[in-house]
Image (cartoon, rainbow, N blue to C red; front, side, top):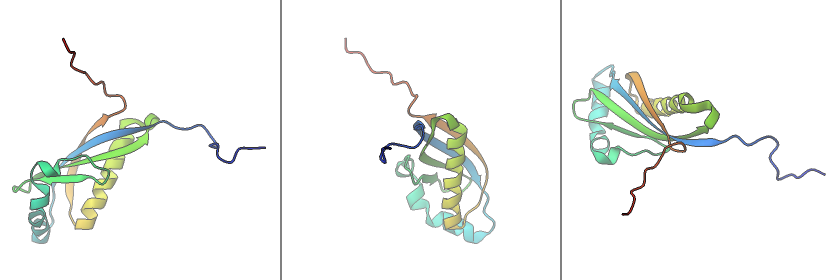
Length: 123
């Protein structure tokens, strides 16, 4: 008799990654620039620099560059490349919803499950 609650196959280890994507804006027209200007209050400053599953978009008044911070969960064996790809996918969704375009991206990925935490010693 089989156990209906038991998983069918081996469980894959999942890790949490914090990904920062940096890029430059590539607005096609003045309408896109207006969308960026309208979003400045939300995207400028420390409040926009959080790692969340939905992602947070930060940029300033120059409308030249931006950063997108997102927290993703992925199979550990897929590694940081998959985490970066998932983050790029999420950024694409955010930009598409707002009707925005960007140029080339650079990714910085941190695996929170393998980070070494140095604790202060009490002496």
